[in-house]
Amino acid sequence: MHSSEQIHARVPARGGRRAAWRVGLGGLVLASLVAAPILGFSAAPAAAADQRLGDILADPQLAACVATALGTTPATVVTPTTLAGLKNLNCANRGIVSLSGIENLSGLEQVLLDKNPITDLTPLAGVPSIWLLGLSETPANDLSPVYQLGELQWLNLGNSGVTSIAGIERLTDLRRTFLDSNAGLSDIRPLAALPYLNTLYLNKDSVTDLSPLSAMKSLRYLNISENGVSNIAPLGSLTGLQTLNAEGNAIADVSAFSTMTALSTISVSGQRVVLPSTPFAANLDVPTPVTTVNGSAVALSELSNAGTYSAGAAHWTGLSDSLTEVTATFGAYPQVPSGAYISFTGTVVQPFGVPRVLVAPGEPGGVRATGSNETIDVSWVAPEVGSSAITSYLLEYKTNDDDWTRVSIPAPGTTATLGGLVNGSTYQLRVTAVNSDLSGVAGAETSAVPYLFEPVFTDGSEGKQIVTGGEVSPGTDVAVAATGLPAGSTVTFELHSTPQILATGTVENNGSVTLNGTLPGDIAGNHELVAVLDVAGVESRGAVSIVILPPVAAAPRIDPPSVPGGENSAAPSGSANRPAPAASGTAAAATLAVTGGGSLPLALLAGVTLVLAGGARVRSRKPRV
Image (cartoon, rainbow, N blue to C red; front, top):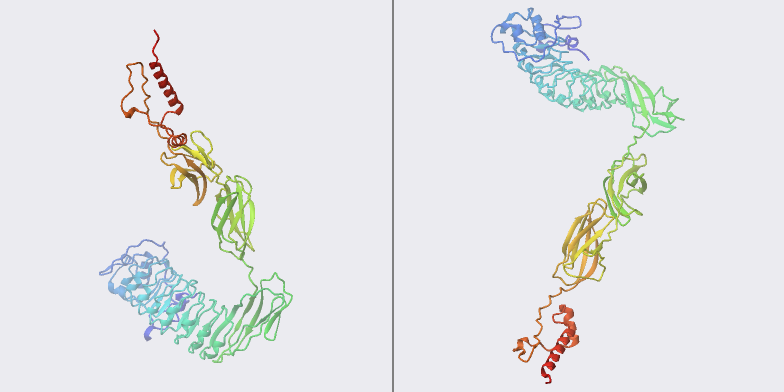
């Protein structure tokens, strides 16, 4: 990188005017004042009247530099006219932090501020007369104030951390610019809008695409060294280019020089041409990739690993598989149309396939497990494959603190069924993807419980099991119980056919559940007791058919008939108290069976009849005298 002081000596006077001064390696040396940089300056007021120079320029280092240029001291009172008369200012490497107040130097034309820790360039926008500006090694991030200087012809931004030059296209009068040593700079498209640019430094940047330069007919000097450029064909249209430095790139073809008739000074030495990687082979032939000005191939020499060159190609035999590359050099000194000879040298590198980076598969996602009788069904979502296709999945399961049991599931399957498990036991499960290189990381663990839902229905009051076809009285307390179920599952106890919920509950941590309910008192006939188990949306049912007996009607109250006590006793009058005629035995029995019995038993009635008859006989028999 060139400093502004070094290159300023070669700048011609602007617009034909002779510069008031020049600074070269042996030129004028400005005195420097050693002082610690002062941070946090406030903006200096505009010098509307005579003031001390140190009051106008807030930064003491800048004030000292300007005082030296004026031949005075910072304590000197200066007039606005004196300040406006200063044309040239070299304040490079002075420890200046703030430019506040420099706008009062309204006549400045040439300003060197290189190697100062300046971050805010805003005050420069107030000095539009500047046409030469040095800001190399200055860490300012915002260059917009610089792009407002419409008179600017010469600009040095070398080694300033520049990553973008968007806005430089506004400097349409720019002749020379130094953008070198900015490793973050790769996009040079804004330069295409500068019609008068004749000198351009892009060395030690990250530029690889030169196409924006193809229409810049005014270019005379171009430095693109150490950028990684491989294609210089866009430069073939620059017929006015006189000097080109393209050292240290990746250029293999210089045939573009055949049309660049003004080229007189050219350097394309030190190229490093890296060919596309190829699989390792013990015996290898590599055609030369290097082409000279007239389009002919350039021979390779100094081949590594005992290689030879013939018939336009490099040859290697018996190479060791431990090698990562083979190399050869080249050197050509062709003549360009201007008559000048160039030095075109470099190295060709043939890399072998870079060892493949092994990457394990990702974690399987969405692992789900559902239990059933002595089995668990497992499913998952395939993860990222990694460096190779997934070959299998490792399904592991265990109970409590037991060791993991492993089952390999061939890919691409993403489901499995585990059998022979113990109902009611909680199993932990996890899934790991395996590719041909590595095993991945197990996905999130899940759990499931295999189970068989076999509910037992009982008479809640007597504890007797209710079996299919059993008779149950209305209003009876009933219960259902089950064990070996997944904890937290829901059980619903229902009476069908028209469903009525008798009870609901949740399976306890030990896998058991007991629900109690009461049968309605007004439903007779054939029904089902049903238990429904819901495990994460999967339902299981258990049922038993029952007969609910009709309700037993309450026996009506019957007053016994009066028994005569003597001659004066008389039977009750009226038909209301007269017993109804007896029905037949079968019909009576049927009536009793349905109603539960509404009359006295036949034997009792017969006894009453006999008593009455006996009484009658007694009453008709008179005692003898």
